[in-house]
Image (cartoon, rainbow, N blue to C red; front, side, top):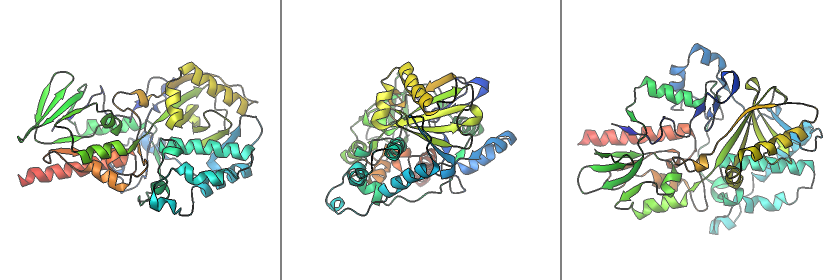
Length: 409
């Protein structure tokens, strides 16, 4: 086998920056944690095998949902009590636990359509502004706006619940992918952008690259992001079957971006893993106190607007809100980096989401082989979950199919 990689490195949207920040600090520009960390996770055993003694000391579980580890601040500079923070979270939990809406039997609507009536009952004030901050955080997690997200699937879908354990890697997720690549000496051909795939009646598929190289193969496993498939960065001859193209077009593919800031000191509470800032333009931050880093994340339309904005304007907006939220602290920004996956030619966004009238069946259609059973499909968009480990599992799934075909022949 040969792996054709358009980039000059492996990993895709799993990429660790080891150069931008002071004191040798690493930062993940894309995916950051091994979600659902446990023996059922296909990355679990690889992580265990490839850990150094230093990794065993520094890699740690990361809690998103522990109330004691989630802080709340306000751009007014006023103190936000634990009770107020908990009340806002309670309202969010209630909004996202709706009773079944009969409308969904007839047609799918957006998450925003379902929660808007209850949201409208929230009184103006600090709690509502915190709820707004938390809703923006949910849009980042889902990689899309709430008015584009399927209510039928979000609230009443049949996705399997995963283990709620997240493993944070001190050297970065990209470092683990690189170690896997090195350990198994994978045959990767870098800087090889595929532009065309021709499926004839022969037993060979012809692959053309931007470098004017032609490669012939019995089977092809396609793992490019859904964003690239939607924008047809690869031409298929003949065109993909209509059922496959319909699934590509209908499944949502969203945006989530990071603004990573390193300061001269840790001025926020060391116990917080995340915090919200009521009234801020970028209201959700992930904390790395030992690195003196805050990672602000944004999704959906807000992410697209941020990507189109100059770096200095984005940074100025965040620093303005931080100074309002922490009026008694003087801090200095040392280094920063802003992701731009939306503009990345080999990503075209971040990960999939349930658009209207999509379901697990849409994922299954995206995963189904086609074109004389010579084209196979893997990636986060071919299985629910939208995580690195679920994408990894789809590669294993398809590899087993191909191996079985080779044995049969």
